[in-house]
Structure formats: C-alpha cells, structure tokens
Length: 83
Image (cartoon, rainbow, N blue to C red; front, side, top):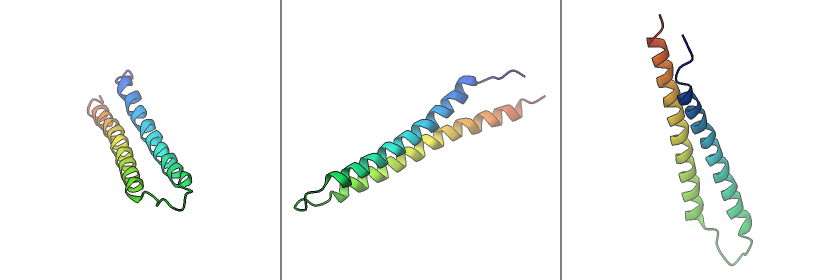
C-alpha cells in the first residue's frame, strides 16, 4: 500500500510544532513581563499574567490536541484499510 495522506501527516506535525512554539512564546512573554516590572511603585499586573498563562496553555492544548486528532484519524483509517 502506498504512503497516502502525506499532507495530513505533515499538517499534524505542523500543528504540534506550532503548539510548542505558542507555549514557548507564552513563557518568554511571562518572563518578559516579570523582568520588565522593576519599578517598585507599579504593581505586578497579575490579571495580565494570569490571562497570558491560561490563554497560552489553552492554545497549546487545543493545537496539540488537534494535531493528535488528525494523527489518530489517520491511524484509524490505515487500520481499517489493511488487506
């Protein structure tokens, strides 16, 4: 059987890589916010930090799960068409 659905396999990998990039950028942003707030007169913007953290984690989980769903559907399709 030929290697079918190559584009979907690549798309699944792209979603997973994009998920890790989003997580990394979220962490860099959080560290940047915490480091840039050196003025003791201004408080640390906790709502913005929590929003970034939860939004980044949610985006990571959604992108990674979407990549896994594509991979799972491809595995199911491959198993159902074995001869």
